[in-house]
Image 1 (tube, rainbow, N blue to C red):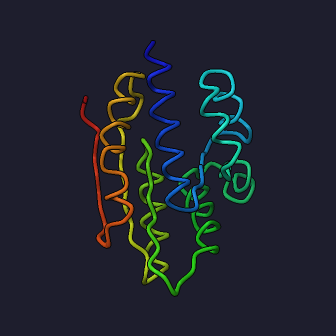
Image 2 (image 1 turned 180 degrees about the vertical axis):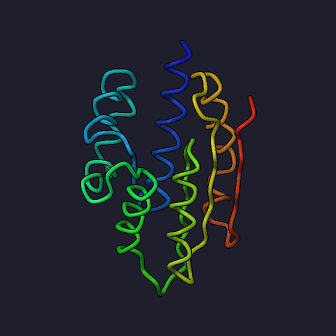
Length: 160
């Protein structure tokens, strides 16, 4: 089953991310959508998500910045950045299918001289199999990506 393979990859990358550092899910979806859809379709992931901070940028910032999803994400990323320790090197790792979150991650990294930004841009609207393949590629190098003192940009937008 393609969905169960995808569920396994998402679960693995989220578990690894939480072992390696503070992990957030920042979405422009309505509040509760990530939890609801994961509980419905990928319940193993839902169990991992219950241990993470999930931020609905839309719910938090739509009234302040109506019709501006870019700014919702920028503000949500900046909010998480307030928790960063400027005295240590911080790795900001952004995985997503939208340029919006890539830009928000880069903007956040510019606010901190010790921040290293690592972005992995996935294909927009992939099939479950394509998304699974993209996640597996990132997962294979995830620890190296996170621990590197360099900035990384990974683009997986073509069919894999």
